[in-house]
Length: 212
Image (cartoon, rainbow, N blue to C red; front, side):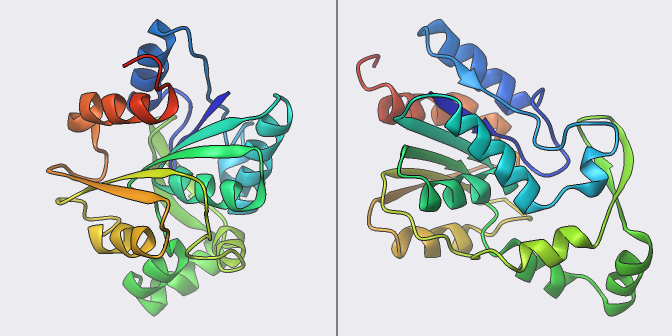
């Protein structure tokens, strides 16, 4: 099974999820793309732990071996899942959001952090096309998880030189400390949508080597 984990404030209908689902589908390979924040208030109440639980339930529902593709927050969650599940044997990470909590805390002024604790943080929710408010529990939970998950399985990592959300240096640091990982740097931004053909080609070679 190939499991696809979407990014923050995104969903199963994201551009990259649909593109990868369509391309792998042509090979007869099904991608499982769960909604990591289901329900009318699922995003507002979500935490990395709740999202990871959904991902791990999807893995448990199918026989191994598994491969996981993750985008941004989903990339970090994919690495966490691989560090915990022996059934995950391959990873494809697109702009994986390593040290997510540290980066958010560093860039947000103290007044904004205090407001988040009181009122929640209002963000653009791309999946629903509206503003939604996520609780402080998301940050508290994120701080409990490893910023740099220890992974031993083959991992293909993509990072954009023009990414203003997840620095290339963060992805490169994780790759350096993960001997089984390989970094592909692209002339692209955080979404990496313009590079989807290259990403799919590389991912296919890793995940479905008999269909080159």
